[in-house]
Image 1 (tube, helix red, strand yellow):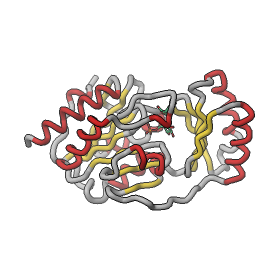
Image 2 (tube, helix red, strand yellow; image 1 turned 90 degrees about the vertical axis):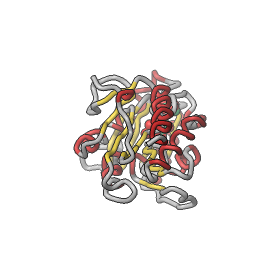
Image 3 (tube, rainbow, N blue to C red; image 1 turned 60 degrees about the vertical axis):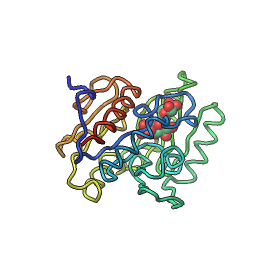
Image 4 (cartoon, rainbow, N blue to C red; image 1 turned 120 degrees about the vertical axis):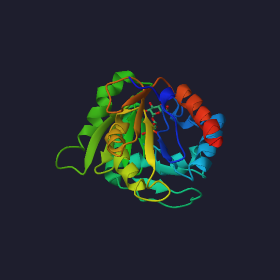
Length: 244
Ligand SMILES: O=P(O)(O)OC[C@H]1O[C@H](O[C@H]2O[C@H](CO)[C@@H](O)[C@H](O)[C@H]2O)[C@H](O)[C@@H](O)[C@@H]1O
């Protein structure tokens, strides 16, 4: 099985990374997540060497992502729906979720003591601290999903999510790869969760390297053991690129 530590960036790489569970360790407190400072420095070094072809691609809301990721990097939030270019800030993105659904889910979550995260293209119920409510969480959102609905259900790490259709990290990466500074480069994508699986076939088709932090099964071709290993790899790659 190919491993991340055997992969090297070159000056014509394009690097896409997921945040939670890939760059940052999973934590019970989603609001505490930050990219560790050393990893930020590595990312900025790589960004310089790759002429800006580095993006953080996250399921988090774009506004939430913007406070956790350096403004100097590309930030792709809402599972790929919304993009902030390096240096871009203060832009307003629309909410695509029916407010009536948000109100109803908010009320039901409050009754059950469930942790609700409202984003612009999805609503997520986190049950990390209430695992006994896993099926209740899925059930609560499933009533709004289905073949004829504009929403679909997705499962993540201890989270049930109701999401607008036609949004995905694979689609977002493919779009970036058609434009500067990514076009003409060889893409690498590092992810860890179910919502990252749709990006791996895109990367594989483009001849790049798809990496999962975790174990098979996955459509990724290459594996890493932990976010700590990813951060160590980034530090090594930043140092190596600077010698080229
Ligand atoms: O695409 P990502 O950057 O990996 O974001 C995926 C989701 O991450 C967050 O939830 C997950 O991480 C939390 C912090 O470690 C953890 O408490 C939670 O159980 C995980 O599901 C975030 O809250 C979601 O919006 C993202 O979709």
